[in-house]
Image 1: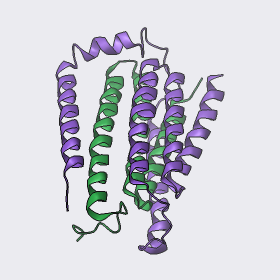
Image 2 (image 1 turned 180 degrees about the horizontal axis):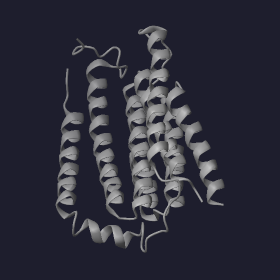
Image 3 (image 1 turned 30 degrees about the vertical axis):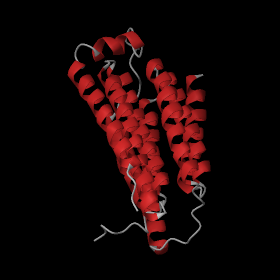
Image 4 (image 1 turned 90 degrees about the horizontal axis):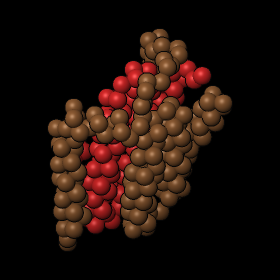
Length: 165
Length: 100
């Protein structure tokens, strides 16, 4: 059952990722990316990380995708129709390089990772177990990341509001 | 039962697709979307390792990466808007003032 869910989700993930990187229309790309993020959330659920799966749907598929789609529609972007100035060289070499990259990483994990998951630890992936850690052992990183969010917020307001003639 | 290696290979493939997208796309927003794809592939690997290790640490890293991705998306899109105001385009081939 889990295996079937995994393979269906993996297929959806790879198909939607291909649409994201190949489709000329940015809106179609963004919708495919939203689909991809929801499929990843499904995969988190299959891997017993319910809390992060829900967070993925809320933060990524909700907030970040709305932001991206909003900016695409605000700027009224057209399709990328012009031929690539760098020519076919980059177009051919880039997929080859990334294929090689996937092969190297894939080989490394196949050789080193275990072949079965251990029994699920008690409370794995629940909001309470993550919250407990977050507010005790990871308290200072948590505060630091909240500072980062404030800086990003102020920075993006400053960047986007400035008028340039 | 799922083999952890399959999930890790899937995450490597997704990351490589993101890299290919960053290298071939020309719209700044499309490139940002491909970066999100790569961040998610990394998160997937983190969750797999969390499930193998059993501890909560790797899940907290995923939590932080998500926060980082939100900050990155906000700042990146603000830069894209400023760029569009200045140059009227988001095509990264046209924006080459700092290009060596």
